[in-house]
Length: 460
Ligand SMILES: Cc1cc2nc3c(=O)[nH]c(=O)nc-3n(C[C@H](O)[C@H](O)[C@H](O)COP(=O)(O)OP(=O)(O)OC[C@H]3O[C@@H](n4cnc5c(N)ncnc54)[C@H](O)[C@@H]3O)c2cc1C
Image 1: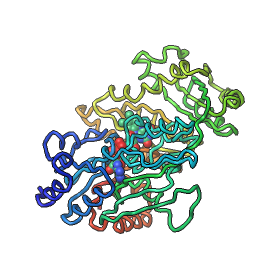
Image 2: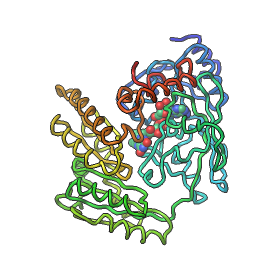
Image 3: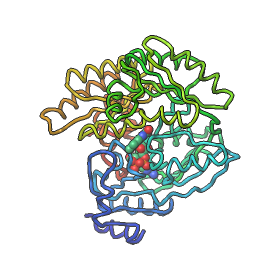
Image 4: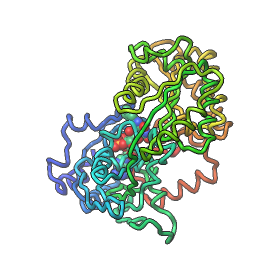
């Protein structure tokens, strides 16, 4: 225990907001991975100035700090691997400024993502990034991970909506990045550097976010195919025409088996081996034009059924299968290794063929689904570690998967990030020059190495 540091932190925030009891430490020892790691203290600052004070104390005593939003991350990013303090941003949940006429909102980093969008909705605006966890994850976590969601294919990801940030570096200095205007090119783009830095460069305390007009209407198409190859060919046709869909989601045959086992998607025709959900949004008048273009694009070899939903209830019924998948896969095995690889859209068939090969050669249960319009698939390897050799086979499968993705011109993670879980694969993707520059950038922001140690960079 780092007693002088804990005493200083306790006297800074008081015992209610600097907690050392076992219950609180246990609660903040976990995220959405199976791993656990106990912090020595959990801190709940209320303001930017308090965060500055906490970092200055931590720097003085070399105490590791792990920032945390809602702990919904699935790569071990919010785990306090080196002990020290967890800095929870959940009490920093104030909207500091809302300017609908300027289409911006300035928030503290503990605001819940979906609540930001709800505020914007009152002026028919929206904050588009929509990770599946948005009802409870926090904007600071989204910024740190550069989170995306199903609508990224049309609207982009978190980084596309950040005008500026306020943050505290590892030396306790306040850093203000970006602008509040829609244009601004002075100096290096430190905003983009901080977004996606996974809490290793600075603790983000405030963000100025861009809002856009809220789409008036939505419509949804659900297409069942005889094979994954046929579905991938349809994705290419969809992405190759001029009406940009607002979501293009894919489910493979194993996903369909999983949702059928839960009693969902009963209306799928026999022989369905892959499913696409294609959504459009925009002005009410534009919807029929968009739908017609997308229906034409979806038509082709292997299409077994094409359904459309134009009112909210029928759309929700069509989405039901896709939305039930994440909990369905969690229930299928004691351990779910959830990858989120990305390949160029034309390479999706190569990726799916490699997944089939891994499944057969290594006798693994693998369920794949996700954001096909971005070439971003969640590849879930479902493992029972009590079965002899299964964990080791899963590791070999991952290696094969990652090498296929990189050989196809893709990337190891489209939205989950690296955290602690994937750090040893980073050097497969980043060349030594890029990795060395990134290490040196980390040293500039955090010379004492106290911010989120054990994350992002491969073991030396
Ligand atoms: C059911 C489910 C669905 C999901 N769907 C998606 C999805 O569609 N798209 C997607 O991208 N992700 C998804 N995720 C993953 C996760 O929700 C996102 O990564 C999210 O951005 C994490 O937010 P959080 O507030 O929970 O952050 P946490 O998990 O608490 O933290 C995530 C990382 O951010 C750092 N961090 C947190 N706050 C700050 C801060 N203020 N300053 C600096 N660093 C900080 C942490 O140290 C950690 O490294 C999903 C997770 C679940 C469980």
